Image (cartoon, rainbow, N blue to C red; front, side, top):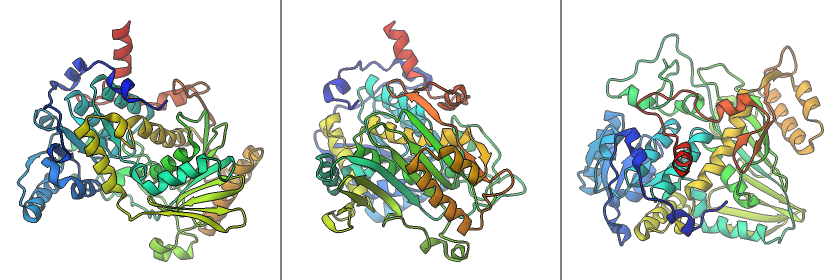
Length: 497
């Protein structure tokens, strides 16, 4: 399902659907050199700061819904680089500019698709942070937007621009260690409670909250922080599997060589160890049942024990050397990927037989890759074209959907339900031991764990085949106007008919 350059460039450049956002299609002639690519940065309270660090020479405009963040960055760039940039709080006004070649999007997950689709329809190339979408359906619309408008769209899974990981992937897929038996991704990252307020959070007057919410439900918030903690609420975020773990999910799928979604998936876990305003799992095992070799993903936000909660940052679990990383187990050995730029191959006795490493500038390399592809107007140069980003993001979404459709269960009941799956049982038993070490009661009462529903889907259509409730969660059931992401797939079918 990889997209060739001919397939990418062979679609119509018509962008009539831009009317959904009140935008007109407009673009400069293609740049001939990277230094000529004119970029606007949208969102930079978090990861967007890194984007600016690596693309500041190409920046012509800044956009952020938070005026304090916006003007603070504008002043910083003026002070550090002597650059005075145009500023916008509303991305729609920014996209009206005809002299912007590309946008770099680092806003909260729930607005990625909204902005990326509108940008492509306005004639801009797009770099969009991970996860590329907030749900599976949105990802499909982003792909359609790129194809229908002949725009380059890159996902921010920067490991794809790591030459050391490329070499490690090639080594494994060449069969040097025999057939792959499974891939295991781990995201053991400290995530303390975000708290829970007695009354709604007061949104600062410097923020247009309506625009911040975009297509998501406009809700009162009972957490302490508007920024960043949106990750831990399904209305706007995707939990840590969709935040940090998407990187490791993408690396694991890359090694497996899978170019479609897994046909079956299940989640086990929950938000455990504290009660707060979040509702995404902080502890989770997701099993993605690829026929050739399964992909297992583990998320742990609690430290290794209850006593270790006194020092969250340096007290997280490791499994076979992986904390935030990937293990690819093969017949004659395994590969450990502990970072975005390093990998080690071992035989089954634990002797290192290969080591790949480069200096850690994965984000910088990824941004450079995007800019060079834009300058050449060549989608085949992209290391993480939107279709790849969509697949890895949607694997995370599968885990979230299974969890949301799950039922409370005790540890013993879970073990009984999955006893026929050895790999899943091993992963769950280690998670259960971890929770017990943190004083979480998972063995009595109705149970604190959530045993998710087994999901089955057709990888070719990405439609669920066994669960109507899962189909309902494939997309946001109600998008708020005027921020709704247009149904470009349906529009394309209707036009073809």
